[in-house]
Structure formats: C-alpha cells, structure tokens
Image (cartoon, rainbow, N blue to C red):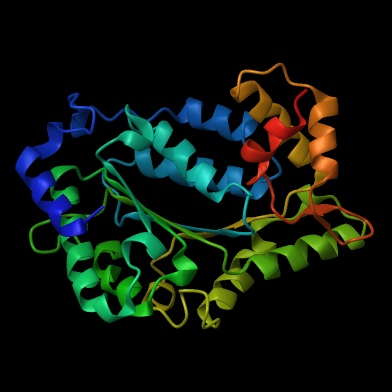
Length: 306
C-alpha cells in the first residue's frame, strides 16, 4: 500500500468503494455483539483475560453513540498467542466485508514504514490517511502490527487523533478504533504466567490487574518496545493494555483441531498430537508453554495428515 496514492483514492471514490467494487455504507455498520462473544468463547484459546477485556470494551464502545475519545487497545504477547486473530474477530463482527472492508486499515510497520530516513514523509502520509478515512467513515478501524518496531516520532504523530478532542481541523475521531499489536512485554507476561504455574495456581486465576500496570510500565521504559517514553502512555491515551498469555499444550491441540476443520479435514486428535509433540515448548523438561503458540500450525499440519 502506498499511502499517498491511497488517500487520493479514498477521497475520490468516497464511502461507497470497496476493493471488490460492492457498495459499503458507513452508516449501515451493524455491530454484532453476540457474534463477537461467541467467537471469543469458541475460537480463541487460552486467553481468558483478553477475551473478557475485548468483549466488554468493544461492546461498550460500539453501543455508545457519543464516546468521549476513540477506543485505543494495545495487545501484547508472545508470537502466535492470538493478537492478530483477535483484531480480525473484532473487524468481522463490526464490518460487513470484515477485514476486506474499506473502513479497516492494517499497517505493518516493517512493510509500510521501512526506512527511518523517511520518517517525516511517513508522518505526513499517515496523518493524511487517518484524517481522510475518518472523514469518510467515523467508525473506521486502524490496526498497527509490529508496534515494537515503530519509530517513536511516528507513534507520537498520531497522538492528536487518540485524544479527547471534540474535533481536530473539523474532523471528529471519537468513534474510531485504534488497535496496536506488539511483542513488547511478552517476557514479562510469560514470567507472571510461569510464576502462577510454579505456585500451583490455575492460569484462569491470573487477572488483568496482575499484569496491566506492570505491562504498561514495562513497555514505557523499554527502548525496544516502540512505546519507549511515548506520549501515548504518559498522556493515558491507551484505554487498555491487553496481555496475551503463552499457550499451553492443550491450547495448541485445540488450535490444531480447529485448523484441520478449517482446511476441510475431519479433526483427528492423533494427527494433531503428533504435530504438537514436535513443536518447541518451555521449560524444556516440563514442556508446558508453546514457544510459537499457534502461529506455525496452518503450514505444519498438512505434513502430519496421512
């Protein structure tokens, strides 16, 4: 995606354009809270904290006709734990065309903003892109992947759109949703989860309060987090820092069975178990938590199917 060209396209074609050419109307967006609840309960494995926070915050925000600020969620955790998947579930239950909606905008930091030397150009492009799309549809969603690799200046450039402003240059951003995906803080989340396990406690006993404050402080003080000393944190513009726990063996099994069904095969526990046994878990002796989560399953699974 070339951002400059994208702004021109969006402005020219207006709110009825989608990439398939079908009409999509912003004021016909119909949030399906029961669909989101069911998806989080049946498709997301091992993330009881994230499921509860996402359901309550997204539902409350979408049912509020006059929110005071945009919804800003920062999802943190190890690779393959469900951060990208959850952002997709949110989009699927808000927009008719789901992730293909022209009102959903996904940015990969390493793909769309690869050169630090062009940071000023990126800042202008990103601001224009957000402004242009929210002008067309106030209920737009912006997803930023790999936030831990995003330059601080670029992060702070979007701060005005996340604040409690009634309008900014004639545009109100209060109904928009911003979702940040990051691996930053994953080690801290893993350490807390590991301590609960070593203490003989169930992972479901871990609560948001056990993680959120230390998570926000961890990413704020970590130079490699993308949020290092950013005004998004010290101005309290992120509504929730949502922790994604490392997945256990049983959760990987669940992912595998679901993936078999998605690929058109009859779910076979023996097949999925053989695949899971070959994956890397930690601690090395106990093999409790998956190092890659469910990320590798779609590509690995076919190898184990007879």
